[in-house]
Image (cartoon, rainbow, N blue to C red; front, side, top):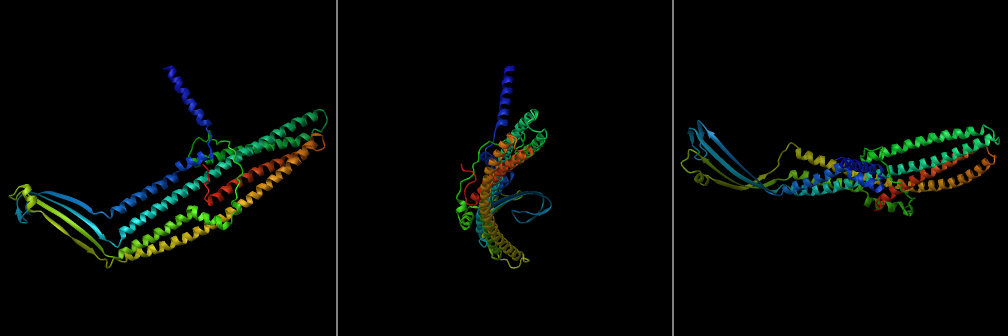
Amino acid sequence: MITKRILVFLLFVGINIFAQEKKWTLQECVDYAVKNNISVKQSELDLKTSDIEKMEAIGSFLPTLGANANYSVNTGANINPATNQFENTTFKSLSASANSSITLFNGLANWKTLQRTKLNKIANTYKLDKMKDDIALSVANAYLQILFNKEQLKVQKNQNLITKENIKRTQELIEVGSVPAGDIYELQATDATQEQQIISTENALLISKISLCQTLLLENYATFDISDEVIEVPITNLADESQETILAKAKESVYDIKIAQSNVDIAKKDLSIARSGYLPTLNGFVGYNTRWSESTPFSFTDQLSLFDGTSIGLQLSVPILSGFSTRGRVQRSKVNKERTEIQLKQAELDLERNVYQAYNDVINAKKSFEAAQKTLEARKLAYDFAKERFEVGLMNSFDFSQSSITLENAQSEVLRTKYDYIFRTKILEFYFGIPLIQK
């Protein structure tokens, strides 16, 4: 028993350690978010509702069938349902009927309703796909922010190590009288500032992890981490494409326009359904009924056959005056149709603006990244030169610290512009129909 408990304990600990050491890839984060996001689940339920509405619309073409029965004990003066005579006595009676009806014509409202359910399912499918795309972009942005904070933290820690080494070396030079004691103060101030920056970046890293955890609906903030994958700067020729080409591609692949167009189609169908209210309705029906009474001198089965009857016919209903209810539905449908057409136009304008913005963002982000790289190369050369002068006593600690700070700022700017360029490129690729994650 003790051995078994030890094994169970070790297994639990092993699983717990594995869970803590798991590092999420971008693909895993996107897949998990899409699968577990509450908004996605709600959209999936909307899709199921569309299937139910379609089933109900198909059912409107089928005939209805119903049956009823009535058993009663009668006292006093009552009409015998079998003989249709008044009887002042106590007797038992039974009546039963079955009826069926079918709509032969109702202005094609049932057919139009079926078409509307199909359009509604298409619209809900587009909404679900758009929801997944939005979540994927949000996850990618949060993921890249964590990577940026991680690399930023590495840069700051490396710079701080260099500063601490310089403090140690300066202290040694002070002790042998090679440099004045005041030279160490600026380095110590730089060291304190860098430690503050490290704490700030560690906090930013934690917050970015929490943000991604919340997007993924995870609660293990303390143990959550992403894989230390290296996301290279994308090589893309999309910037060479014309903005008109990208916009045309976006209209085919982005769901905003498809959703807006689907809403217009549904509004048109709603208007057509509302206008069906002006037309007459023709129904066909058939019915069967029978009855039995205890006071009638026939057997139960004989009465069911003697007193039964059938009915069959047509029922025509012509709308003449309905208190403007039909007219009101038609007018509201017209207003809604105009509203969806305006929303479609607005969606087209928004997409055009977003595509042009994304296009310019990529170009500017690329230029910023390239400029930051050039600046970093120059800052490295300047830092190396300053380091040589500092080591031989030709530069004081203040000037050397400034050179170190400018190098660190240049490294941080390269990281910032790198991840900004990566994300901007992802957005432009998204508009061009390229998947966010290449599986």
